[in-house]
Image (cartoon, rainbow, N blue to C red; front, side, top):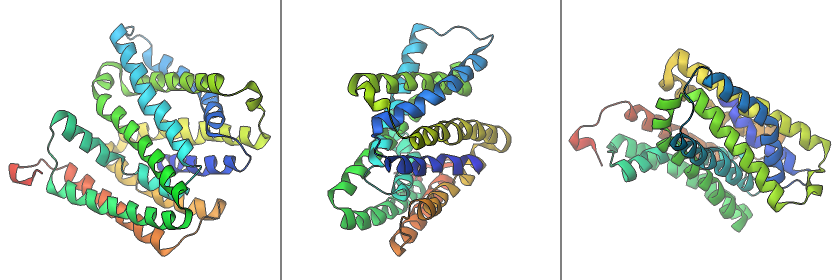
Length: 291
């Protein structure tokens, strides 16, 4: 539960940092710069006594790091400049459904009618909140939602293709290596696209970035992994349902975001839909249950 709350705090910190005039590229660079030593240590620790990576392994790590941690993070940070933290979290919360859709497209895996119903309910909730923000903010809301949806899709690609790598390298080693690769991508993006003077930011941005890299990045990764080890992936996923709620409450408290009937109704639909979706995901589908 603490891991889910910490993950959801990332959007709040990013929105707070934007108040000091920093751009997404610079903000992401600082987050990854502070997190890089920890990820390198994680990769080294998990790789002790293990076989060295082959060329194929390195290509896989680079590809997964680019998709799952660099591109997903950049699109997410960019999208948060245009939409509320609550809508961002609801869109990202759809990630399990995107993974299943990719599995259906790429591996021809079946989707049960229960999963399909859960997807319809959860997507309806996101559309409800999005429609309200679109009416209030116009095209900016559409751009922000598309960027965050791109982030969710990019991370879903990582989830779909990381299975074999996890079996070969282990989850902790893969996360450490892929995240380190993403850190280098983010730093390189800053060097190639921004003047060095862009590193001069308000002290608050540095402190927020340090908080983001530790409390909202490294710590929740470790907490979620420990939770999976102790209570299993299913129960961990259910406790993760606190994420959208904590984002909404922190957004109202720290960002002065409005808590309205559209947000409450949309969030409720998303959580109910994902609950139904995950419940049916545990049950083997018979032929007449597949879409």
